[in-house]
Length: 287
Length: 271
Image 1 (cartoon, rainbow over the protein chains, first blue to last red):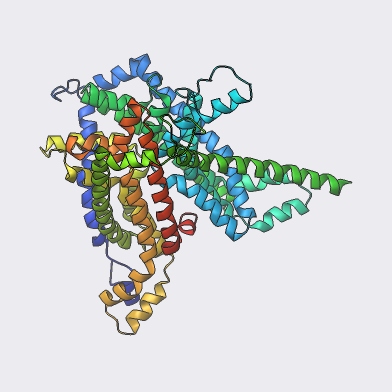
Image 2 (spheres, chains in turn purple, orange):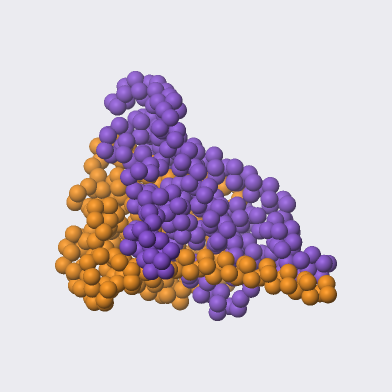
């Protein structure tokens, strides 16, 4: 390629420095995933007979398909709640002074860094039979017997939305910060109202952030095994727990491997749809 | 009249947005506060509000040797995984930060992929590979598995710090006769250190809190804290776990406060 100019030498480092991590990933990340794929393509637990039996089993079994469907739906519900609640936080962040900004960021960040088990446990306390919601409703005389909130889809969605909210809010704050405030003023002075300006100017321009936030939230929500199992309880089964049961309790590794691959592909499909949308939206909002 | 109408319209918009934002912030913060309050209960249940207040569950925690054991394991694994992540991750970040060629972009996506892929599937895959090559699960396999899922945080934060670095500073240092190593040690490293520390901090927290990878790569001798807590919660609702949660929440708040001082964590994660 010819000698690089001398000035480039001091500011850049050779690709060799990436070699140790690349090797580490090859051995301990890529190789395990390939091994997973290899085992999933076998019909027996010993891995002697090649075949698509595991996949056929999954794809023809209504129970398995139901688990996949409810997991993907759960992700969509959580992402929608996070977007609805997270966007106003990001909007408020741009409106307040630096001191309040730091406070908002810390409120958003703290849960992200607090243990997931702790955060999920908090929701057990809130949603339980003797929890705050039931206690409040009972003392107000609205209900006589405690509502069942724990071990319901509603409970899982609310708890997951809280647990994953930072992943939505942080990219939104970044995206809104990049929008030229003059556009907002221009739109208003040209006669568009605040609502119209929001939906026609602010929202479209923040699409890259919306898409980044949705990708992270969705991927995290469908794999959030602790929250799913503790709030959902035994009756609700989602892909991660299904995978774990097959691998650990039933020792059916090839089927667990096939579940993992199907789950991985589902996540990759969702992520690539979002990424494509992100690329399109950047062209749209590229100011 | 139209001006007044527009003001009302603007007010309605600001009112709705602010109300939702405040509700959302309350939803984010409330669970941690509730756990903190419940952990000081004098009763035997997780009833809210507690019937009275005491430190009895914190005293109980003092004697919970199983939790101490699990906490020690989690701490040791998190420290090793963070150390390994920093060494591997910073080196890789230096290599990939200033180039946008196809191979660099591919490497970058490879290093970031553990963030989106289901960690449970990776945990199972790693267990299968380790058992295939005859490596029994141990603290070593845990450290390896945790490093894979934690290294992206170090790479991302270090690349971000390098991107904000003024390359002319390095050139000036070289022009003034400093060697490459000297420039690295005295100019580059001090400037990107906050980014590295922020990445290491997030890596440490996510390793300490990791369940999906540990679930497959640990054995009875390496009980990990979040798994111990999870299994305790599946069985019975123990108030000791509330006290432990209280300790973890306070420790997290303290660490985040220190990190905010040292690295400006909040600005780092929104830029």
